[in-house]
Length: 270
Ligand code: PXL
Image (tube, rainbow, N blue to C red; front, side):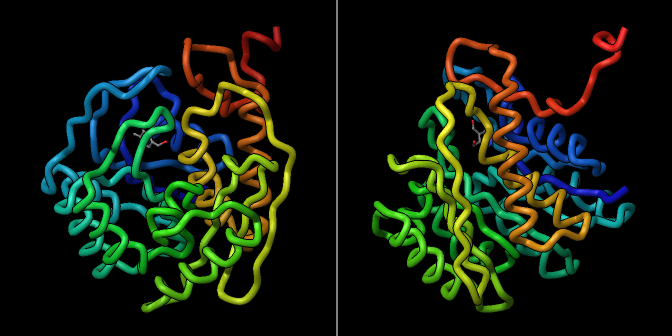
C-alpha cells in the first residue's frame, strides 16, 4: 500500500482539509498521513476562526513521518503563514519527494480568506516551483496570473503561462479548474507539452464543500499508484463527481460529499 502525505488545515465539519484528504486517500486505496497547518472552526455555512500552527508544530509533525514512511505522493493545501511555507520549502529542498500536488488555497468555498496577502505572494514565488502539479480554480488562477479567465481558450493560455513561469527547477504542470465558468465544468491541463481538456457536464449541487481538497488528494493518491498525470486527473474528477452525486445531504450550507460512495458499510450488508 502506498503512503500519501497531506499537509493541510483541519476542518472539524469534515468536508474539507485533512479529513477530506484522508477519506479520499483511503477510498482510493492508499494510506494517508497528515500534518495540520491550521485548526479552523467552521461548518457548512462558513469559516469562523483559524488558529494557525507555529513553524515548530508543523515541522514537528512532518519530520517523524519523513523519517519513518516511504512517501509516494504529497498533497499540500492550506498553508497560511510565511513561516509555515518556509518550513515546507526547507523540507522539500532537503528531502526529494515525488508526486507533489499543490492546491493553492487562498479562500474557503464560503469566501473566507485562508491566507494573508504577504504569505500568498511568498507561497507563489517560493513553493509552487516545487510542485509536480498545481490545481488552481478560476479565482486562484486570476490571483496567480493577475488577469481573469473567461473562456476555455483563456484557461489554456493561463495554464501554459503559469507552467512556464513556475518550471524553473523542474516541470510544473498546471490544472486550471473551470468549475465556476458558466458554460460547464471543463478543466484544462498543461503538462509542459500538451494542453488537455477534461470536460464534463456541470452538476447542480450544494454539496461542494472540499471539492478542491478532494480532487488534489485524489490526484496525489492515483499518482502514488503509478498512473500517468492525465489518467490520474480523469479518474480523480470521476471520483469527485461520484462523491458529490452520493452526498449524504448534511448541513444547511455547502454540504460535504460522500467519499466512500463505492464502499458498502457492514450495516447495509446485513
Ligand atoms: O476548500 C478550501 C479549504 C482548504 N482547507 C481547509 C478548509 C477549506 C475550506 O473551507 O477549511 C482547512
